[in-house]
Length: 75
Image 1 (cartoon, rainbow, N blue to C red):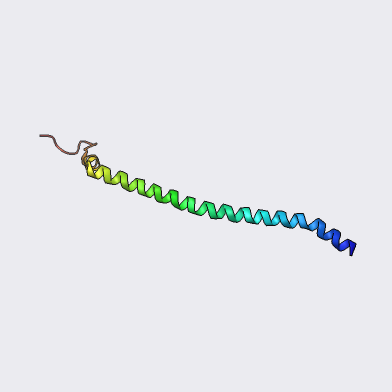
Image 2 (cartoon, rainbow, N blue to C red):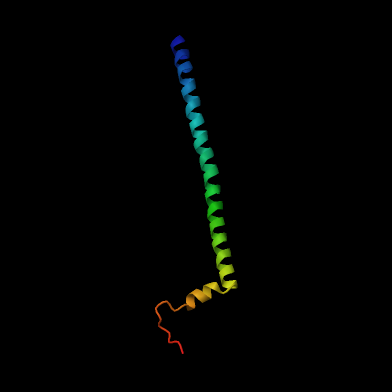
């Protein structure tokens, strides 16, 4: 019986350590996924806002109409 109790005393800290590691891994996943999704959503939102503002101020249209290679004739 003494050997069994010694084995349990020896295994208890290892069990707690493994349990703590699993809890930390779960916490990391629980925190990482929403943060990743939120940052991705914010990036998409900012890109949409920039596109809307550029369309609103016609800068995007001006960029599309620029003749970089002098293909249009100037009269």
